[in-house]
Image (cartoon, rainbow, N blue to C red):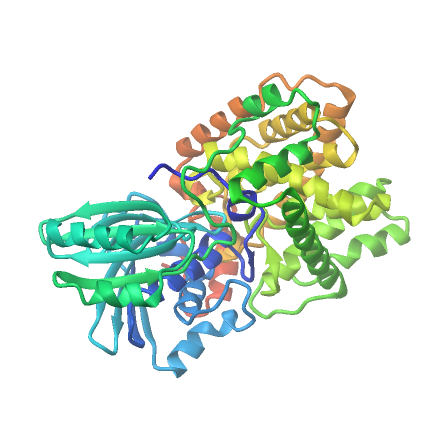
Amino acid sequence: MSRQPASIFNDVIGPVMRGPSSSHVAAAVRIGRLGRQMVKGRLKKAMVVFDPKGALATTYHGHGSDMGLVGGLLGYEPENEQLPGSLAIAKARGLDVSFRIEAYEAVHPNTYRMTLYSDQGETVFTSSISTGGGMIAFENIDGYPVKIVGDFYETLVFCVDNSTADRVRDIFVDQGVAVAYIETAKTDTGVLVNLKAGEGLNPKILERLEGLPGVERVMALSPVLPVLSSKDCQVPFLTAKEMLESNTGGDSLYELALAYESARGNLPASAVFDKMKEIVQLMDHSIESGLKGTEYEDRILGRQSHLITEAGEAQKLLPGNVLNSIISCITAMMEVKSSMGVIVAAPTAGACGGLPGTIIGACRAMGLSLDQGTKAMLAAGMIGVFIAEHATFAAEVGGCQVECGAGSCMAAGGLVELMGGNAQEAVDAAAMALQNVMGLVCDPVGDRVEVPCLGKNVMAGSNAIACANMALAGFDKVIPLDETIDAMYKVGQMLPSALRCTGNGGLSVTPTGIGIFNGLNGQGQHPDSPDK
């Protein structure tokens, strides 16, 4: 099966979630939800192992991977209000989940090796990765190579030999199953047949498969992503250059985004617009909640978002009502995120303030409508697709340039749409914004996604305003967006691992940063603490 094109709602604007990090919390929830479906009995134990050279070994607790994974094993969605208490809930229910650090040379820094045990004697080994922005991929199940990302209904049939696998495939054909793809993997001990479909199999077919001689196990997995994939999905373009060259009708960027996501998700354009409108309303509600004030014990920064309004009323600020509104909205969103409130990862939870706070803050300051904000967010989502396709949103892979930097890039394109600019101007603004943040490192202080994350989100909004205005005024972006995205990805791979969201570099290892870590983690001490 070829890789499915990125979806605005799967890969870019979403998921709706709680927690400090989409790569850690939301992705872990999805890994847990799929893992839980792999055993039929009551899950009683899960052993999770991280490679010491990966990012998760040092950040899995502070960034909430343990909370998210256990929540997923309990069946929670990423926005479930019980998610912050998932570890205690699992313990009370008799679910034993342990986390260990052991060397196994993980290829990806966000690798989860997990072994599941049920009360019926079932044991399942899995290896999966968090690929950025809440997206995941299972790569191995019980020794068989797989590619499961949560966008299909998956039926996995474990067979003793090729002849059994052939009979399984015959059953799919005889029963008229609407197959998207059938994939086969072989090991020395058997054959795995993996059916991917747009709907779940009839229970009677599953019973027939389970009773077939030579079938050892059947797993039926439901999707965890909001937009399902389809066979041979075709989208109108996958690069900014292709999009602009095909735009002979002079459509705006938001109209091109509608056309793209309609094709990607097999949805009417009106449904795409309405879905984004709901998301923008949720973002606005989160910002309003933040402005009213949030409380949460386990965080570095307290409530600050109201200070901009108060200082403005006291005429203490430099003039700039749009910028100041954006700063306030970005800060409010980040405070909701840090207090475990519901936010939208756009494109990630660590960068959840930059894009929404910029678009909504601008709309508030200029008195623009919800529909105008929705169009701007769709335009931003289209820019994000190009990043998802040709780079990454995972700071563990590319540093903060692929999170806050990407958010700034997307926000710049969205602001041009908001001001009635054309698609070329929006793409140029995005290119300039991304060029300005090349090489931005990820160095969260205290193993919390707050400092310097807040400042970087605010910088993302400020940069977006400048670049949108420059593009609207006709400035030369020099380097096209596609080339800028490619360069950003290469720079990310050049960054030392200590500067890619491990808590082992930058501001996180300053004396103050180490002191904050030690204070937040009680008895635990930072590896670079002078006391160790």
